[in-house]
Image (cartoon, rainbow, N blue to C red; front, side, top):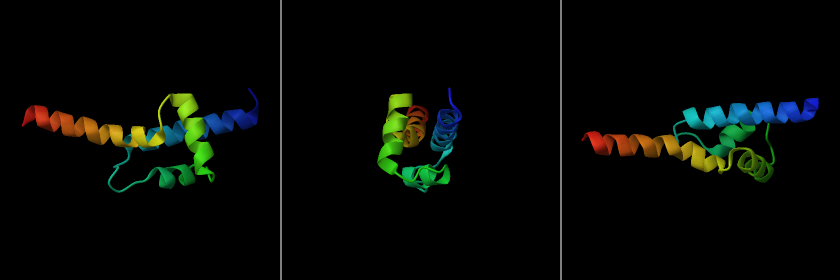
Length: 75
């Protein structure tokens, strides 16, 4: 693997972690993509989907959905 590919994969990994940990009501995919140096958001979404088999917005909103489901089960 070349250094450029490594750096892209590293940034995608960091972006995925940030998306998983972010609050979807205060954070956008665009915010996180630009934070990790992705300026062409369509290419970011395509590379992300290719690597993780889901759109970045799905990752961002999954945690909120899981919390809603958990609170519905509890209360």
